[in-house]
Length: 431
Image 1 (spheres, rainbow, N blue to C red):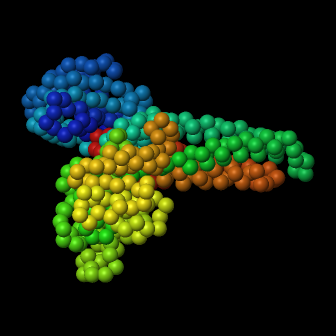
Image 2 (cartoon, helix red, strand yellow):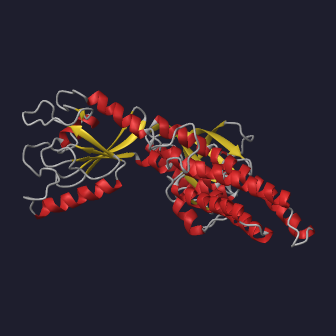
Image 3 (cartoon, rainbow, N blue to C red):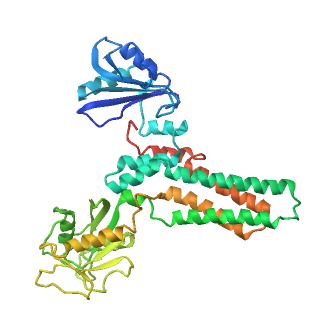
């Protein structure tokens, strides 16, 4: 595989569909259009053409063709698109004709986006935003991903980098033209103040919820002893029979995960085995151990067991379930009481979950960072914060350099091939 190859892939949804879009990117893109249609259309203008198989001369389809010369294309290199009929046979025939041409090959997952990154059409933060946009299923996910893909984080990082460069220039001027023993207090104060302001801005962004939470969903674990109504409550929350409900203790022996969006917020509801210290046989004990592991990774724990007997965690919410059951046990005043079967209290529970989730997931109108970005942003933040503690211009210059380097890795200006392979490998083929 070479970056100089000409690649092609179906970029629209899987057939059958009304229209199929096949993208071709690389040095032979215009030649492909000429071979298939006999000509290359005016750039950025759709043209109707009959496409024929260069090997047999057989008519393949009548389609729209478009030509985008590089570097002003989506991939940053010569790019062509074929908008054909979206039937399986049509798509297969066109792909076969392309595959049989010398110098053309099928694209790897994410290869179009990787070429856009390589040619400077987007940076790594924008590429990650695009990946999130492709996986977005809720309105909140879409809004957040549109911001990232549109360069909101990249622009903020660029502002920080420009400020750091100005500070570096001031420090270098002091090193070049001032006596080492004659530190200018006023100039030093300006540099330290500006660095502290940047460090605070970065810390504020780091304190926001991570972007991954929007893709993974808020983890809500239902816990309690056997027959406390966990599975019944899960089914009521997701509005389908996701878990088996039975009066037999230990029916749920493994972890059951159900993703769902509520009011535009992604949740992952997790039903667990009933937790008890005695009477469990070997398989059930394994399920109980897994339940306790889920408590450790939960964003919220809905505890349906006796009050005060759940995990000692600040994110635990006491729930008095089975309100209409003969063995119902009320809890303290203020604890939410629900009946999943009758529906009593369910609206209040959903409202509670949505309100709690708003503090766990990023807001759609603010820039958030994922774990990879946060790690490098934290490196830059620490370097800038340390500047306020030193008086030596040489040390300050080095801390500024480290901050710039960390931000360069965040945006992909300094990235390893392994990391890029992992990131772009998560994209679908044709993107």
